[in-house]
Length: 264
Image (cartoon, rainbow, N blue to C red; front, side):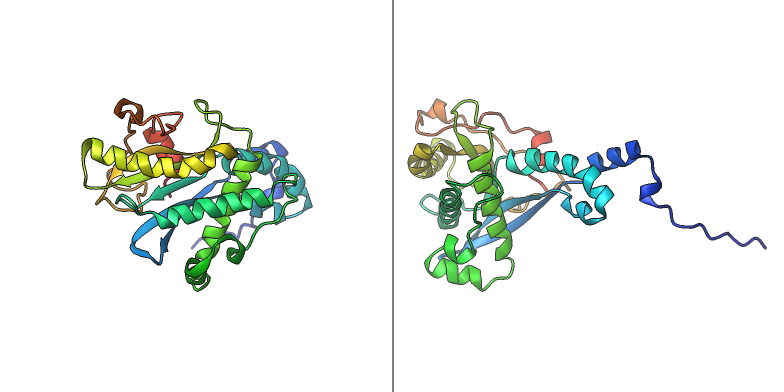
């Protein structure tokens, strides 16, 4: 009876440098969904898209750090710093959306805190500094609120330091996929346009816009994933409805972008 010989573990550092560099470039990026609610609207959910790059590999050893750092830094810049902040808003009714409003306010508060700082030098505000009132108290009682704070930090760094702007508006944008209400046609579009206008009225003077990357019908799962039948958000042509106050997204939502940039 033949006994298999024990093979010594293969060392990553024994690979040629060229192969190691290819592996660094192929390291997976991560997208995670984190839901949050406002205590005054407990039946509605908002999902923030939290992105991460494979920075843990930099802790392996000095050689790997020196080889991988430029690649990981470029990946981090392209994926996180220069990628627009993205939110899936589960609030479908007109006049609702307090959590979205609170998160946008927190993002702009963090942007203001970075005003006089170069990238990597500014302060990151705490949850208690970013949110107010009973919303702050509600978030402090939840362990997963740290993910919301991290999203706020990522979004603020994009708005402050990214050179990427919306081609149509010249503004840096926060992208939103919205669950629409059961109201159909122009009534739904007017309601959504009015909500966006209320946000953009105070944001535009700071060079920021909330743009609608697409809409999904209310009633579908509010945490879309890559599995199952893929429902692609539809774009609303607000200008066709005379809603000139709305600043449209710079591009049509497509299946590839929806999967690669939004879904877990």
